[in-house]
Length: 171
Image (cartoon, rainbow, N blue to C red; front, side):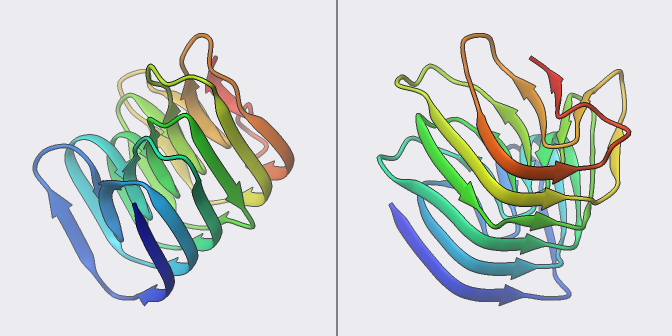
């Protein structure tokens, strides 16, 4: 479990030819607090995120005051998290003003929510996603989350996203 706090990443290019690519972490779990990135993130595979590519299992995963203002390209791509493969994640006061482009699931804050984990706690509070979203190959595009697997839920309060898309691309 990691604890990353007070980090600013500017003018960076992050490339991964495989899966799990993010400007701060490819995959992991823990606490991300007061993070800013304007990186260009490119994944040749799945799970690309502005901050973290894949959030894994963890008892207390939290993302607070995270801001992404760069660009993300890949599959299952999100402005903050590419793929939430965890039973608990709380996202509070997060902002995506960057662009996200993917061929499968595109989300302003999270590309996909899924996995075998139970119980299921994914909470988004006071967060905004206003960056450009582009889906290719009939991708699921959601203002907040690109896709939620069957049986998974997201509790979202005081969340705002681009109005031309539904909150969730595929549920």
